[in-house]
Amino acid sequence: MSRTQRRGGNTSPIKRYLDFRGSTGTFTYYDKDKRERVELEQLELIVLDVRASVSGFDSDTSAQITSNLVAETGKDILKVVSWKDKKVTNIAEGLYKDIKDTVKAAGGKFTTNVICLCDVTGEGEEICNVQFQGSSLNGWINFIEDIGEGAEYDSVIKVKRGALSKLVKGKFIPVTEKEEKDLDDKLKKNPRAPRPIWFYVLDFKTLPLTEDDIEMATEQDIKVQKYFEGFTDKKRVEATDDSEEQEDYEQTAPEDDEEDDKDNLPF
Image (cartoon, rainbow, N blue to C red; front, side):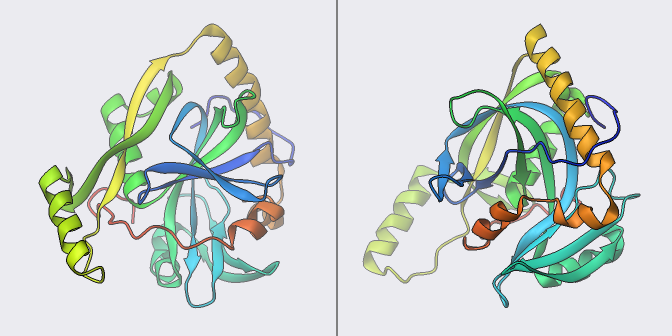
């Protein structure tokens, strides 16, 4: 599903790639000019399209894992590769259900890519790719279930850090102040004491779209659809991220150690 369904073209209109770090409760993106990662406390998104992919980190080889972006995981072929030092190694190719075990063994994770308009610099909206994995993906899935599939195109979506949480019997439960205090006391006595897996979840809120928002989004989505429908199979893997973005991003640490809600995630 997309805001528009136009065809042709192959130049990526996506300017920035963002992800959510559960350990800090912030969104991050790589600033190529400053050559550093920038943290943002919240985003306001105008959704253009939603695509699935595989991304992750191979801890054995310190390689970034990536794939093409697909509209339907049950019908569209994923081509998953690892990427390091400008060298690409094939991991798996096929429908996600058929390759997921191989992908997970390599360190890849199912990823939802929200292609959207977002102002991350204060200089106006750009076409961005906000990527959700793990607990943040679960948060996105729950949000879509609450508003109804397709309704993500009908509002501006404000998303920010939610409660510090833990996973209990498949549900995200907020960590209490007492639990935080008890952990602080424990770590003061023994800094090497085991730490529980706690992470920040996402908080979503919908805001009205203006007529100008709708007109701008429709115009920009035409560019997005031209890109997705216009490039060749060979370019599908290469075009998942800008090569400079990939080169810089591979130097970052692996994904946060967050728990996944196994009942809801499409694994």
